[in-house]
View 1 (tube, rainbow, N blue to C red):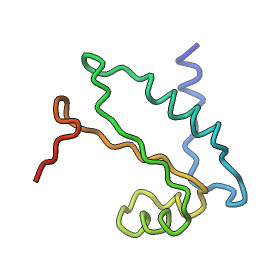
View 2: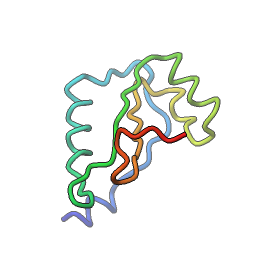
View 3: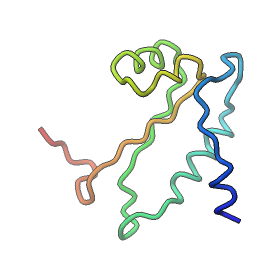
View 4: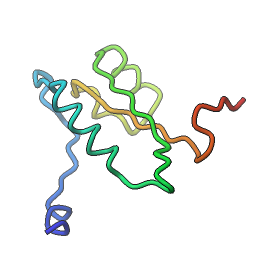
Length: 91
């Protein structure tokens, strides 16, 4: 069953700019993402939810693979921290 779901997946790159992503939908996506396994359950990730139009547009300027954000109304950015370094400042 999982294989069938994976095979039917699509990559969407244009969104309806009048669409609204609810807080509940964002929460559901974040909860699903946090269920992913990690080494010794370290969960070395952080999520940033962006809904501000100016910030979404700014991301497309410095990251070439984010052009789909031009029509998106929200984005979830995942950052990864090496295991054991969560909360550590590296200069």
